[in-house]
Length: 187
Image (tube, rainbow, N blue to C red; front, side, top):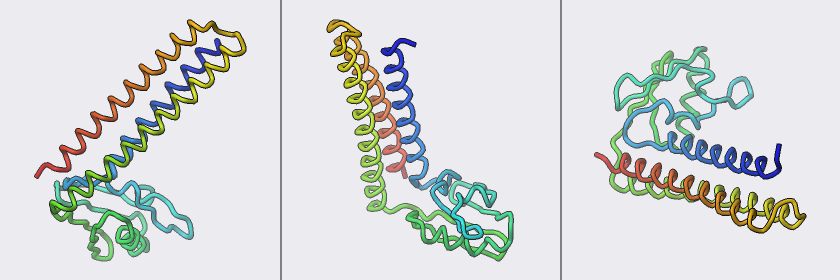
């Protein structure tokens, strides 16, 4: 494989992964509507090991304001309740000993603004990651030019193509931010 193609493939793959991570992070932000993805960040102590909640319980959303959690093993109910309470989600799980209900309280105006700030911070971190990927790709191209493996004209052409990939990725992040912001501020 051509070294330039390898660089482009690497840049493209890393940018896609950054976008996927940003989307995964967005799924953990509460918008007032119940979603199983809201509990993705919750880790439960399972016999001394921290594991994702979805690996030890069935998570369901029977209506837009309620999440239910059905542990696969009854002794885990207390651990799951503790894990949800200690998470930064601000949720108050209610247990009957076998089953856990998590009602989602309506978001206050202040909390909505805090969430928007958090989302903007996450998107900004993703943009920084994408710019770092661009920088790394450009440095590799510069090295190829310096080693006379590509011409200066080719370097500038490839540099421009990497910039286009970067612009496209950042544009996608801007759209994700706008959509999430709209979703959070919706009443």
